[in-house]
Image 1 (spheres, helix red, strand yellow):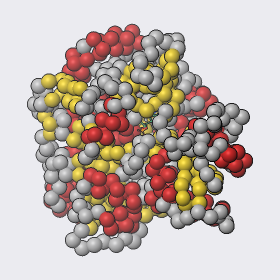
Image 2 (cartoon, protein in one colour):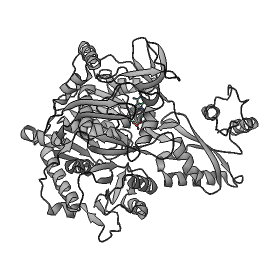
Image 3 (cartoon, protein in one colour):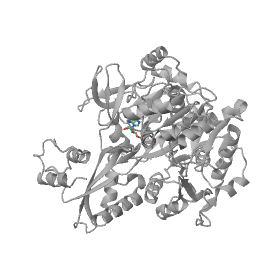
Image 4 (cartoon, protein in one colour):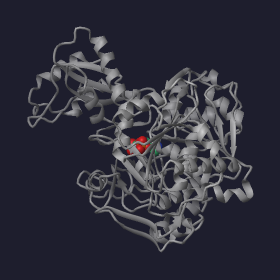
Length: 629
Ligand code: PRX
């Protein structure tokens, strides 16, 4: 189903509310099912228990690969642009991608991977990452992709939580001018991962790596001895497709579980409608497949649509800040989907990196991951879209499987900094702290969704209660997003940011508790508190207030050491931007840290700290204010 006018949008939206099952049945018909579903939807948000297309049998790779072979075998499925622009780009046609997915699927089978087994994938942005994801899906193994920037400790936590049997990695990774070890990091992780039986290693950088007999295997050797045909495993619509870990406000990251049928339908439907995909277009999503955006809009959504998806190995600033525009011109990109943090960073280098590029192939632009500020929106519109490309500001989350609130490119009206309208099938509501629905327009509150859509999270792996507590308990009967939001006089939605203790740093979701736990593991640290502060490029930066056993003799050195500990426990993306050593934290008499005060200080707004009389020791506030960075 592709909506092609604003009028049609309104009609279809209404239909999706009046008859959701009829609406989704129509969308679901567009896919290849081995056996039709018996029931479109069964749900309650209390347990929660959500089932879409129950009884339907399918395999997502038959939709992403096999069904394109008859007419489009030689059409490019993936165009891969390497880190170094002087290396050659690689195009994988649907036929080649199919062959390579089948070969790898046979390797996985040979080493005992079966339907339901978990496989951890820790790879750079090379075509083999997409191939590994699809090979798992082909045989019904559950993939858990871990972003290449995470540390050994983060990898082992994720492997152990899911009980992965295999890890797929590479010797190293290229990232801009750097070569980053991957296998070595996995080796460290595996010191504490008893479930892992095999490690499959791709050669990318030719970095020397240790290879253990009986455990480690070379990708290139293994794929030589298997067939390039592998029947797809028959999956139930509600069988698990993948797990993807994401941070919350408390404790360790959660394994968000998505299932086969609903996820396929939702990722594909949103891809086609939001970006108004036309056959033959080249779609470039700059995310990493280690995040949900890459899962849905590099791999599954585009491939299930028979589109050409561009994968980029490197970073937007290497060899210079014109790299994305080089890629757009070189590969005649039609749809560019990126993050506000990338736009702001490229903006800061100045227009000289844009001016020698034509960018005339671009037709549609997209933004994702964090609120986009007015300045970045207009810069993107004028300088990249040359004033004529529509921008879709797409709001959604790992737990959603696909975009929930967004314009449809060129079809629905746009408004800078507004995600605008819910997609047909999505029913957002704003609520106050007591859970009362806020009706009408010109209101702001907490954003909830009151009816399921096919891509909704099914559970958090191994801990269903946590899923219920996190998303379905704050406002009973509704899915709570954790975001604040306003609805303007036209009914357009604007996401204002997280209302919980989750930070959004360069579009990456980071839990404050996770960073605090990592800092507290550092020698000599007694306690810490993390808050976000506005950051010109990253959107939010990380500000750490830290109590140490003794006043640090060399504070600068200790800051660096603490950052190194955070990088080792979580990964470099969670390193604090600012560290202030303090002798106490503002706590209530019941021992709760008043983050509101710390946030104000971190923002540099100390004029009005509100009521501090309930603090156990109000004098710490003056000390913290005086030492603010
Ligand atoms: O706060 C919202 C913000 O990113 C969070 C979800 O993060 P994650 O699960 O990592 O997924 C990111 C990409 C889908 C949301 O709760 N967010 C995402 N997109 C937007 C956004 N905030 C404002 N505008 C957006 N377009």
